[in-house]
Length: 504
Image (cartoon, rainbow, N blue to C red):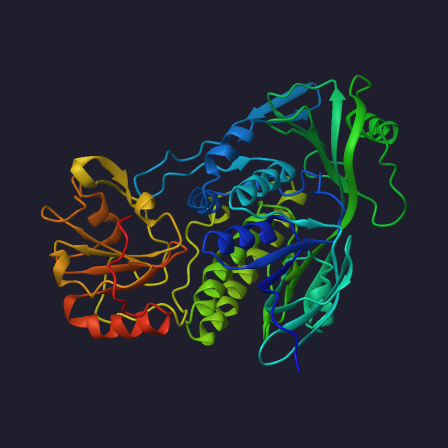
């Protein structure tokens, strides 16, 4: 006889992925616990870049404004050469109606996680620090976990377990999941330091394209700089203030740069690895537990956050009655994305070793999607415009009483959104829980006054666009394809109810 359930989901690991998943579950009313074996929050700057697609995710979670306030934009690159330096500015495209975030944010990871913890606390939850998962067993009905913490040993019984416990994941090891890939033959130093000698108006770089390269990047919202550079593959590295000051002097030739204190430091071997599976029964992997990247291109934290964003709504839907097969689409959708990001980060690492730091649109993650997913309803007759599986673009529109709003405002929250272009609202599917229905047109509740919606989506009168809770297009159909759309909605757990959908 199994023990009664104590909660629905146990999240093991309170980093960016675990916190994102916890926020997703909390705003859907799912019961969960978030545990972390460390006694206190991580205090390093490690993943400091927040890409445009992640900014869209954080806007949906209600924390983007706080992250903007906590961090800043990337400073110009000041590359020192013999006799002086060159200052390199990155010209990024301006925001567009469909892509309002084009500029990566620079926010040290400890501040990002602080903001996420604050948001989670607003939703009534907190991580449990010093609480470690020691083992687990699963069966057809749930998972029995073995946890030790301040309260001693306990064995909570949960429906699902999610390992967001980092690159050395206990959960992954316990499941005997292969972590294929390679060590990249690069060992790097990263440290958060207080220094004297260079200003905070630039990212300072020396010895570009050589094994002696080194950089100091100011961390907005703090008095700290992140010190980075390759180091010897073997041997101890002196990570004290005195040791790092000596390293800077050797590599820069300058005696005026002095490290006054070190708040966090690490010397690590870069790896590119991908878990063979993201799901085994009722246990899942997300974030660094499922994939680890070299830091080039700022993809690791962003990919991890979006793993959790994808998994969260699916867990909630299945717990609310959707078919369990919906959870299979998590690995189906996210593992190919991680494989692509591993390849990108590795290519960018090789380029950086040669002194090429150019970054293009590919690091922004705006073009990633799920066109081949079983959750993307095929529409063979559609020859142009947005397709199922693509990121749903933003667009400025007019809402109630003719007031300006945006599609992203309509999408914000844990619901699905169905948009009908120039068709009467009463011709849509019957209302159902967790589905917001909008008619876009002169007689609709949303007016596409400047045509931005029509251009971004490539829709024609009578078309309907279904947008998933995570901001991707699930289907684009005509009025004559409502039977297929209805079957799709049933498959993802959106069954017709007896009450109308809430207003956005």
